[in-house]
Length: 139
Image (cartoon, rainbow, N blue to C red):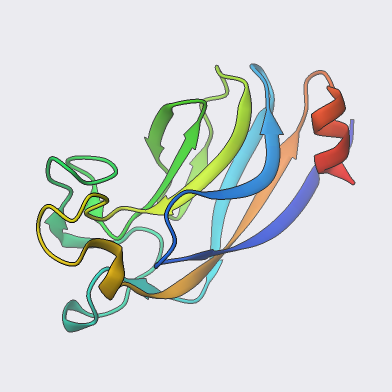
């Protein structure tokens, strides 16, 4: 089967954002940062999908011990760091969701309210076995 590529813009102010890419175990999926920048707080500057290594996620962040502002992914409750490049752990079924790593419940301040910017990612995928949902997402 041919490899497909789609680009998605992920916004810093929005929580979990659907990509329209549905995966199953054994699918080959990679997410690659393409451009633009975002921030969890304009006072600390803007960064790419790797986030800032000055601050790490604390309890209450999307993902602890990962750079604040890093791109994070989730498939059916399995949450993982994406950063500038990630080959996804496709052991789950579901839609690939993406988000910036920040204080999701506002335990430490403004949470997503003071975020700004967006990044563009490319999702490259090859399905091992096509399901009806995957056929729709591949169109």
